[in-house]
Image 1: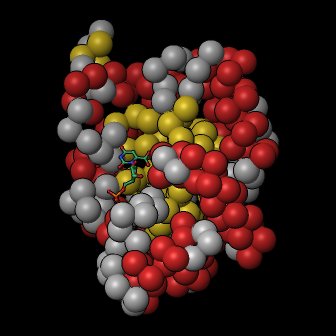
Image 2 (image 1 turned 30 degrees about the vertical axis):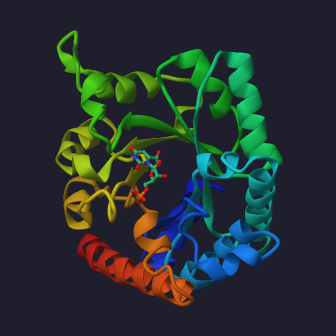
Image 3 (image 1 turned 135 degrees about the vertical axis):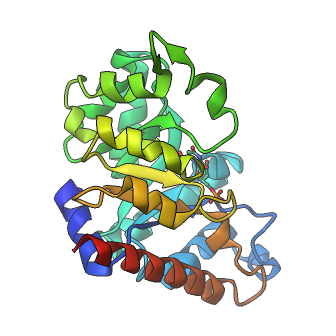
Length: 273
Ligand SMILES: O=C(O)c1cc(=O)[nH]c(=O)n1[C@@H]1O[C@H](COP(=O)(O)O)[C@@H](O)[C@H]1O
């Protein structure tokens, strides 16, 4: 998907919500477990209930890999459903890959071509030649981990390296990679106050911001420091939406939760105009 299309969808839906499809069979309602493919049944119900209020879905690949071949089949069915029924919705493979060049290229083919995702999360630790193979794919986007939402982010990402914090080098150096226009970055919602400095380095880049909801990040703060002229934000919530109810009304409650977040986003978008 072209970035302009994503922006036009955000404006149309008045939302920059990404719903994380972190589907956990220990948390889905009991009545779904007797179905042939409970993961897909759950995802389909969640997508049907939330698609009006969001512009992106982010299956976290760990939740599918954990169930072996059946998990991959559920992921494939989920992607087919999204690509056929909701081609305007941006898809993110939260896979956090990155390896030597020829291996990265295979990861890129797996997620961009075989599964037809619009984007993938990638770890920057192995540097330029581990990231550029992802950037070669036209209209596909590589979302580089910069400053993550977890506590351990402070172990390395904020270390002082030659006078600047390491995550800032990730932002600045990667802007020099070939096809850098296909880059986006992960900045955790729990690190909202850092967004001001992030925007000094990448004023227009799209940021995937996970960590509102279950991890306690604050949407208003994220918008205050992180919103760009072109909006430039995709804010993710997974558990806060998926498991708003674990009863038979799970989809309805997920829809209501997504709607509440969309309404808060609409207020923030109105401030831009
Ligand atoms: O890359 C991510 O999406 C990600 C980066 C990060 O810094 N923090 C983070 O929580 N995530 C992912 O975002 C989702 C957050 O889920 P909830 O905390 O349930 O909303 C999970 O799939 C995480 O793996």
